[in-house]
Image (cartoon, rainbow, N blue to C red; front, side, top):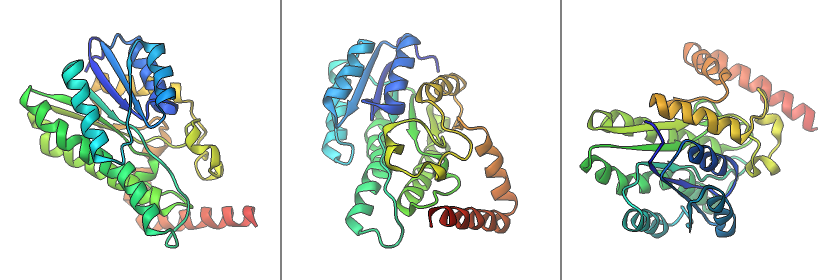
Length: 257
């Protein structure tokens, strides 16, 4: 899909990958870019840069997602591309409290589902549309040090895959973005040794790759090419993969002690 003259909504649009996408999509000639974020001031700053519109939205809330979509479709026009990009990370494993699990589940998984629940019927009724969901390489592999992030990103990838399989023949285009480490506020408080194995990429670099992938209507977007090799290794020999990850975990534990 070409981005020129398209109406695009980006959640998590105040910073990081979302802000970089907004700028890059504007350079491609998008008709209108809507930056949605809990941080309205940040979203407004990015929207001002690209001649777009800012809407305050907390994607953990059903009402905010619904209001966002309905506002754009009634005041601007039919959404051509919806980028469900907002996400959070939290560290820990089985000790993480249920309320923390629920919050990351709402943002990293249910936000994609709730947006699709509204948009897919609309898009199919008008002959098609495009959903780009941001997940992570952790959703294809694993995230050392964070069970909630790993689990929710796996679910996000799986949901995107289901959408593509179920509605692809009806005109719905679906992409899922799965980067490793990206230089964004999200990794500011994270041990980068768990995400920087193959380098920290700039958000602008990720946005450039997304434009190419959308143009090709490619399902799986891998800004770090090495991830594709890891997927093949994991699929070919899961036992060896787990053993290798266990060794990496042990190495990180030794470094931290």
